Length: 125
Image 1: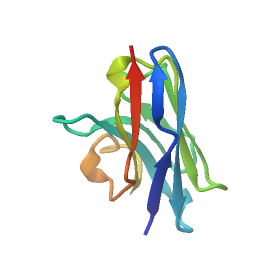
Image 2: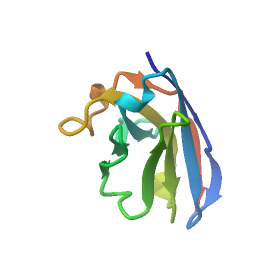
Image 3: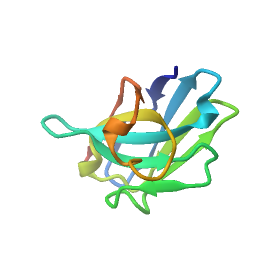
Image 4: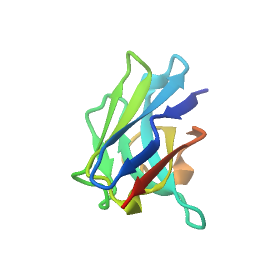
C-alpha cells in the first residue's frame, strides 16, 4: 500500500516556475514507478511525466518536454516535478501516482494503482 500527498501548487505568472512534491508513505516506495498527471475540468486526466524506481529512466509528455523535470529522492519517499517556463495551458490539478514497473503503459492512467488527492496549479497570463 502506498499513500500519496501532493503539495507545492499555487498561482504563478506565465514564465514562472513551481516545484511540486509528492510525499509517499510505505516502506516500498523505492520499488514503484512514479508518475505525474494533470486534469482540467471537462477533460480527461493526462500524462505529464514518469520516473522509474531508481530514477534512471524518465518519460515526458511532448507538451512539457524541456520545461518540466521529474525527480525522486527515495531516502525521503518523495517525488518532485520542477515546472519552468509555465504557460497558461499548464493550469490544471496535478496528481501524482504510483505503479509497479516501467516501460509499456507508463503513460496510461489506468496502469497506476495509487493516486494522491491533487494540487491546483494556476498560471496567469
